[in-house]
Length: 312
Image (tube, rainbow, N blue to C red; front, top):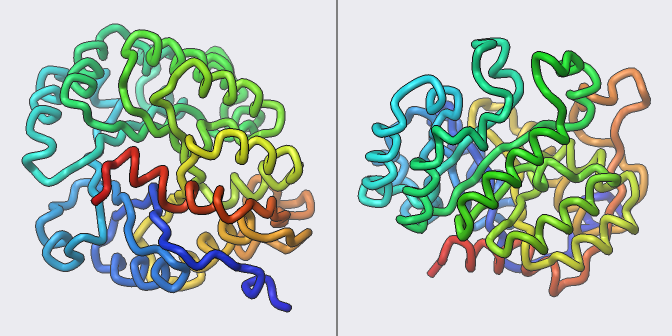
């Protein structure tokens, strides 16, 4: 039996984390996603008008408007608040924010505690007031902090960045949040902290992008990962972090098949079908499935997004 034949889920799938950079490649991403069961997606829009996309794809997408955290802290928060107030009337459903240590290479005067910076309080209050869900990137893989972010005076630490996000959630309670990349904590030693965050913040959710990060870390201890996902089955959304930017079919296929194998199957040591630079020279990354029950797969693949995003 081939690895793909291990896929067993036959229901609807909502991909809660996709991007469009080049509209010309959106058809391919949609077509490959549909081949792997995706009937709807959340699309993060980077500088493109959504009007043409909406005409072409009807109800396939919900749209997330991108707000640069870098620009928020460098510019006019009042302008961003006005954009929040008109967000839904412009056709968007979600706000996307990205806070990452690499900002400091652009402007070393930006605060390390970016997401908890008090200057952003009115912006987050506006999001809560208008009940707009937020998809936010709060930190990067542990592997990055061991290499490209090793200068902690410049970049801070991952523990610091996670704590800063928790401070934001404490200050803006009730905000509906989806934290990208499994809350930036799919690493085995971080799952306990993520579980504590779920207990503290009832409006907190996470998604499962990106495929290589999830396969590398959740597959490192599949039994513990399976137990964690089952325990928190109502807080985790399927997402691939696919970006419509290339005509390479294998780019999209590799990410969809990787995540579906990870969550549906019990395969062991299946080579990741694309390169993982974080394990280059160390044997590569392999998929070790966590074999979730059907009821949990339904929550992960569809039901949690339907609740968070109020899908009809």
